[in-house]
Image (tube, rainbow, N blue to C red):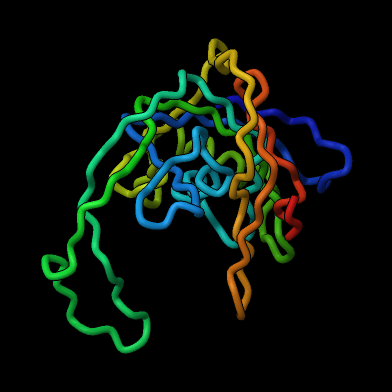
Length: 219
């Protein structure tokens, strides 16, 4: 993993950037406008990248903010048929749930043989009892040892994500394209979960994430 120890103007003074490589055989970062069938964005979304980081290391004393996503391999799609269920267990008054009775087969347009470098920052929250360097060091050790709180995944839980330290030879693919409106984050509050979208563009294999998505603004 490559740690960058320079502060960035206009951001919190206690923010430092780091990188981690993730890869897997399949991935599906589902476009929310697709209801019946799953269709993946061509690139990992910032919210999916944050989920991977939190699976490796998370504490309430800091927040993850994704800054860049590097695409390391050509974008390739694969068509799959997956078993899903048509209903969910209710959060209130849950009842016995028999998957066989509500199983449905749905088409998935997923990505195949993916690899990314996630560049992100930890932002300390009020009341943190340690300095930022201590949390960065904990994350670095966990990546080096392959440790995680839960197995990270690439959009869907059955699409396992592997992770490790990127080396200096990692380079994004030479591809520039508009990705359209992409889901950046979901702002959680007591009344409603608000999705935040932004106009995404891949520039020479790098998706730059606008910091505004973490401030609750749609772009």
